[in-house]
Amino acid sequence: MTDQNDFIDPDPIITERSDDGVNYTPIAEKPALDHSEEKTLAMFAHLGIFLNLLTAVLGILPPLIIYFAYKDRSKYVAYQSLQALIFQGIFFFGGAILAGITWAVSGVLSVVLIGLLCIPIAILLSLIPVAAMVYAIVAAVDSYHHRDFKYWLIGDWVRDIYEA
Image 1: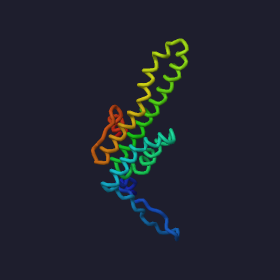
Image 2: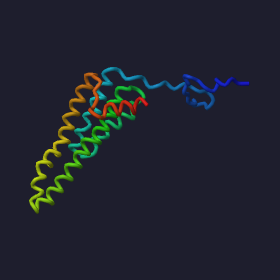
Image 3: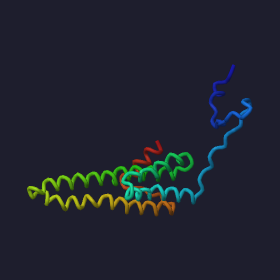
Image 4: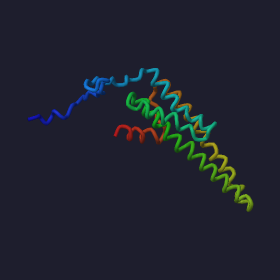
């Protein structure tokens, strides 16, 4: 009779079949990141927003790749890259779409002179992506100095998601 706890191992050893097909060898776990690697990866996750200037959409790839590649090796890197990914999605792309819509509406309405009143609003909304890039630079510098950077409105939400 086997004990019920035989099937539950608190620290399972992950193995792979050797070349002879009979013996199993343990697979080494990925080592944790050292301090300088964490700082550098977190910084690059935040600075990925600059790829949006050249490609318009590829800026989300660095934080996405860093998150999935290092989420099991460093909570700090995972938290910073997930924040950067969500921040870019909301503020950079959302702000750019909102600014584009406002410019289109003000252009159409300028025929009847009402659109001219919308131009100052369109100019202000066009500054959202620029402000997002400045905020991402602040995030990159803080995360490089290994400060626990937290985006306004996003940081607590990501932390709750990540720790759940």
